[in-house]
Length: 449
Image (cartoon, rainbow, N blue to C red; front, side, top):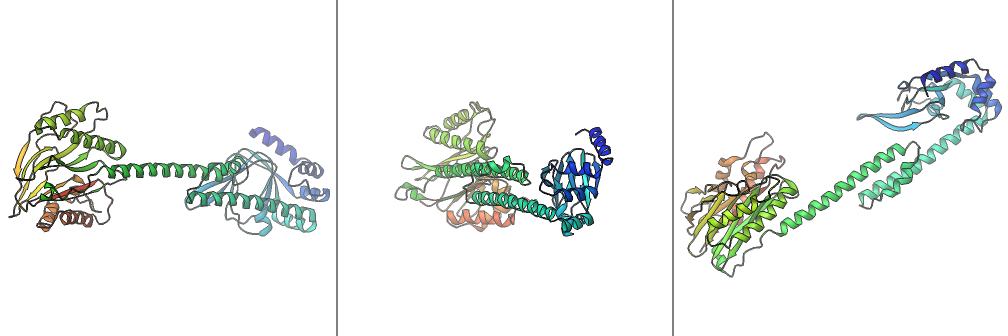
């Protein structure tokens, strides 16, 4: 309603007689059941008031000293909580607000703000209390109004409680709130907010289920223990992978090539989440496909070419891939930009297997050098990703290579499982509960011909 129209109506109403004001009240739903004498008595104690849009009619927690009948315009009802002002409802004209606090003498339970320019009839507390005592029809109308509100509130709360419980049971049906959200009662706004929240929760639940399924698939492609009734008995091998999220971009792999050679791989894909996990799966497949090529340098160049082809996302993978001759202990390897693995000599001493080329996926024409070393009985090889060295504590300090080397020395002489478990435990203890920022993957191999 335009401001000029509201002011004109207020000025005109102010000059009207009690009879005319009573005639204005009579058609309103709240006063329709009130007898004529009560209508005239109310009209006699009313004052015409106007409020501009945005003006506050009533404040939460103040003692109510008047009620207001809305002749024109709309109001918004808010409840103040520590988090801020929450919109509860929009009330149109021909309703009464503030009567409960007036009749009970208790603080107001909400703040009322003019949504549009408003014209209202103010009734003071003393007058309304006297009139309800004198005119039973007015008292019964107020009780009926409050009872109707309570009925609607109970019904709305029942719907919302059922919906909340169903959401907790994963049985939520958006249609159960369709009727409630389409109504214009005091809880419609809250019901819509709840429905939006429930939809978001359901979407997150669905995404979480998808991520859990992806994690299960990713775990299923990790290698199974080596058959011990074969040449593989020459190695004690154990590996662990702990993704920072549901799924990760690290992976490890090991498998026999023929009867007397063992291929071992550890890798770290750039990025996080599903894209990294997909590229990880592709990388694993590629490495298995090229491992049978007799010339390792040719095989690694082919792996790099395949991972660089059609790589629109510009992803890459650092990777250590080695092949152990289980009879002689000769280890031939390619380190494509990966963290140098540690070789712990049985007689003491420690070596690192440095990179022999850049990460796969960056340059399709890059050649890769192959290096070689000898594993002697009792030697241990430790492969890892940078989730270990780049683990942080709550103060932002990095675990680093020095702490890793100290943990390796503490695990010297242990079997593969204990060596890996000791490194992981040292990393977790250092982090002291800080959030894991990267995938943690490590593999231990002890040569025992």
